[in-house]
Image (tube, rainbow, N blue to C red; front, side):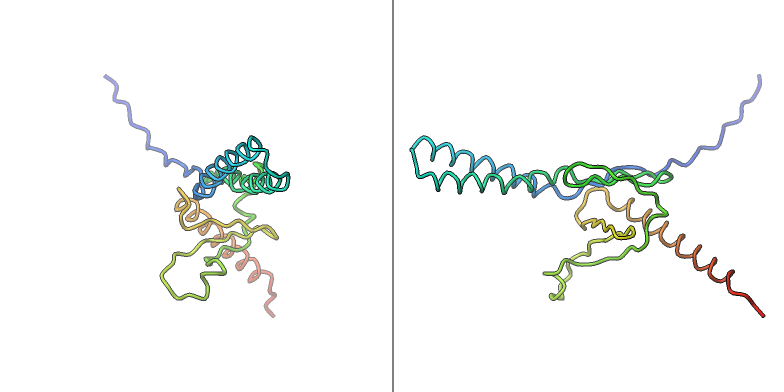
Length: 167
């Protein structure tokens, strides 16, 4: 019998989807349903036109909250990541596009000195992507972002050192 050697197991590439907190979308749907019931009751009771318009505007104001379910980041360790914005439009980024990664707090939380966790902002030129502290599956993505940012920073520092002429 011929002995077959096992091939070494390949390390799986990290990939996944970062999903922000879904609470605003749920709240938007609940508010939309409540305001729709109120609008229907206003129409059936022959209420003032102004009242119906105001309730209709309240329904329209819930739409952006409902659309927050479209925001997500699909990432792959080798290929980079795809950012889906509020309208569902996709934009592909490579890991080399990251210019800066920083941990920050929201403006209202900066003044308080409590133990609130930090959000992470990834800067890609003029574009900024905020990954909340409560986003689902954000740990692996942020690990990859920090790793590639540090590699890029080290590579450009080495290029600057080489470009300096020694006399």
